[in-house]
Length: 404
Image (cartoon, rainbow, N blue to C red; front, side):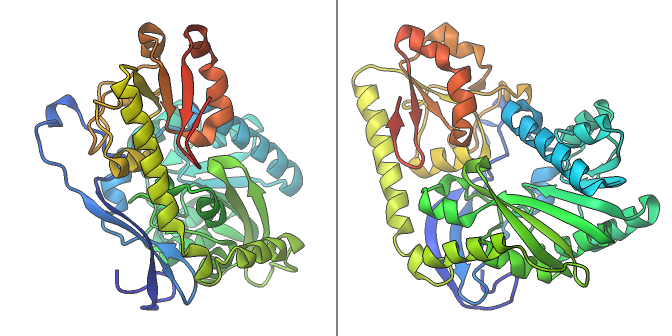
């Protein structure tokens, strides 16, 4: 990476270098275990001109999202989060047409359909898009570009509300994608974007959310600049607990945005105080990441030496960053389970740990369960409470090692 993908500056400074790993969503079949895997450097840098944190675009979205392993509806708490958002947005904005970009399996738009509001999903992955169609959610299989946005607008009309959850980090052509959002939204409409907040990533050592499918990592300051690159103005921001700490950005087309909410100034002040608008806030992050790795490995090795058993729960993208960075293999983690049947019988990229159905935990009664989607702590602690029947304990690796 020689220049910032947002402002073009060459002033990029290293934040943390996680070595080289395979793409985190390319799960292996049994037939691929004797084949080589391609790995790519995973090195986060920050632009000292616009303060966008980013990694090089070494893979293309087509490689990852044409067929995708992530189905959003397998998280009950995420579906409820989407339902609450839809209820509030429909009540306040009263949209007649809603478009969601990266609409996945219809986890959000199903609630729009239930309310009788016309909607459309734009989802590049054919397999998860089909799941949305099966739920009765109108969906087109496309990547969003300025041309796609204009074509959807010409065919379906402008959207009163455009939603883009957990996708603004996934696109290397940041400016083109933002222009696509502007093409979709009505001239007096609204755009709602949810994306992980760099502030909590840094403060809580959430380095496992750095992976090749996430091309950039936002503060409100850098998101504000990114939105402006496509003709959108930030008017409000909400701090959310999802994914370990996210921001919901509310934007409107330039010219109709009006006054900016006091919330924006408050969050910008918090970011500045944390040192994320200069280099001070990034200085010791690599050392804290190394500590997470050492603590987890020390724990797993001690359990193995004592004859104990550890299995994983979940096979999320973030988990594969953690497993690869720590060099964890089957001698330390026998297997991991996942609710998504698509992943059953497959293996984690790089570390090649088998993925099986969740029922396996009750059958094997392991001593410890390493929770890889730590951001769903409350939901998964309830789901896994039964392991305490045999004295089993949960292990959370982020923001620091915790055994409960």
